[in-house]
Length: 134
Image (cartoon, rainbow, N blue to C red; front, side, top):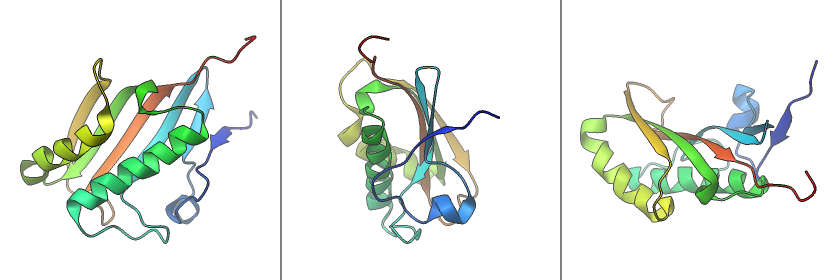
């Protein structure tokens, strides 16, 4: 069995161990990042929606940095949100703070009814940086 090449942020929140999943996996030049939520270190949701989105992006960026990437390396984004009729525009306004300049990654937004107490989740696929000599 192949060992998974796991990427973890320096201070991972409690949800990874609680729900038994990896923050991200490196494979074939890509980084597959698990859905990131606005989780505080103890695993509880940030109650303010805009701050929950910001915290989800900060959690995401910590994983990307641990893999030597940034949001500029992201090629595909999927976001999930509860009540997208009321949350989509607010989430997208906050996302613009982190999104960067064009060209933008591909994006899919999905409305859901449940996110385990959270209102927003983002998962991405990023291109890993080229390693010299490979």
